[in-house]
Image 1 (spheres, rainbow, N blue to C red):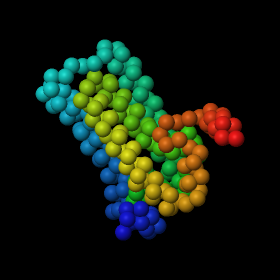
Image 2 (cartoon, rainbow, N blue to C red; image 1 turned 30 degrees about the vertical axis):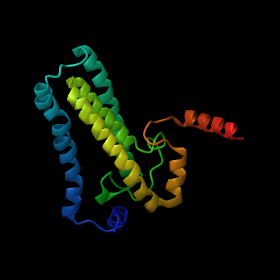
Image 3 (cartoon, helix red, strand yellow; image 1 turned 90 degrees about the vertical axis):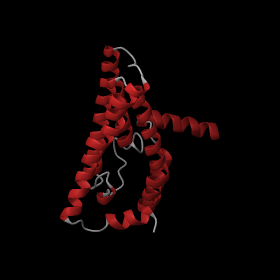
Image 4 (cartoon, helix red, strand yellow; image 1 turned 180 degrees about the horizontal axis):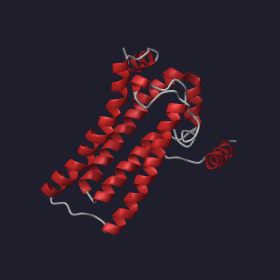
Length: 195
């Protein structure tokens, strides 16, 4: 059985209290302890000294640039999670997947605002730390998560939501947010070009 089939079947079953707890606790552990250790603590305090990598940028530049990315990332990340919970009636976790296709803001700007926010947050932390190896690790993490999203998650969403998802996918960018008005102008220009 494919992963998409398992997730679709699992999302329709009522969850036991233990499973519901795990579905909520696992992301807290992964995003609060595992990823920070892997992407920030090990690179900053083990890899950078071992490889003798210097800090980059000035402390003020790191604070400003890192602070902007962290703030932007947190806002988009929390907004995306709230939209999944309120509109989608679920969470980003497969055990409690959304029951409705979410195409409203911030999902009207791009199909993956949650990952856009998370990637901005992680790059912001790496910049704030001034760790070159952390930047490399975050870049690698970003590539992996985006490939997984493109080739696994999108197939699962296509299977769960059918033509509604395909129509949404055709009109909404993958990861880089584009405001609706700008996207409409781009589509109009493309339509003129193809006529």
